[in-house]
Amino acid sequence: MGHTILKRILLVIPVLIGVSILAFSILHLIPGDPARVILGERATHDAVIMLQEKLGLNRPLYIQYFSFMKNVLSGDLGTSIITNESVTTELFTAFAATLELTVLSMIIAVVVGILAGTIAAVKQFSVFDNVSMVGALAGVSMPIFWLGLLMIWLFAYKWGIFPASGRLAVSFDIPRVTNVMLIDTLLAGNFAAFKDAIMHLIMPAFALATIPMAIIARMTRSSMLEVMRQDYIRTARAKGLSEKVVIFKHAIKNAFLPIVTVIGLQIGLLLGGAVMTETVFSYPGLGRKLYLSIMARDYPMVQGGILIVAFFFVFVNLIVDISYMFIDPRISLD
Image (cartoon, rainbow, N blue to C red; front, side, top):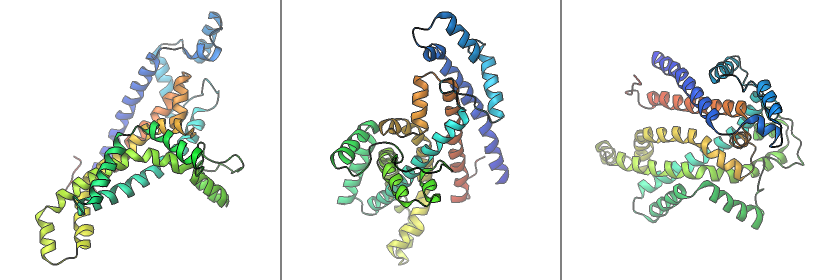
């Protein structure tokens, strides 16, 4: 097993190199000149040329790429050409916010999705089954931006339950230790700020969790129904085992493999969905940072952001692959 895990870890390296080449190439093919964006439309041609030379944008692409990768290997993602701040610092601050949002969204999606899917399978064709599956279909079909705007209108402006944007009210001044607001507020011992941080997270987390929650619920129902028709489930019932033991000890464990696959894919895809969610809710995370950087043609920031997202996606899939062997030892990744 150790050899297989090491082999899978080594395969991550060429994947990340391929992603970096692809991202770098596509980014430089997008029309628009960062020097022109920084100086404005009224800048003279000579001023634009001088800034391009200063930023290294006049060098051949392959030299720019190797220079970028050399810095990456030394842990330096470069300097933002818009803010002139360290890309590494800015991206990891934003990534902490996105990670906080993504983890909460995934917890909501997994808990509600598996629970709803399991109950729907056990009570097939019941009212709960029909309502939950219609709800799952609606969840998959609704665009995140539309749901986000609807939630802001209802829960923020009409009923005033949740704040419409941001991570924390400006009245709270919390020392940033981890940049994960729920942890930092607890470390500061400020429970009012902790409650405020949760209130800021709830709406974007639910909006982001909607699609994965619906997909997990449908997959859980389908997988559970298939397992519950197996002979060993009939045998377990014939032996007089209670329905709870049959479901929780025998059925769920064997139905879990395809569900784990879906969960792994959804965690990675949540980062993509975070771009839209963070933009709608003005949430200062990695997705919003990347969106604004693309608009400003901030190449170092976008390149670094794509690498972080790619690394996170590959890492999650690696964990999912390895977890297969623990869930079902008969599976070999070779």
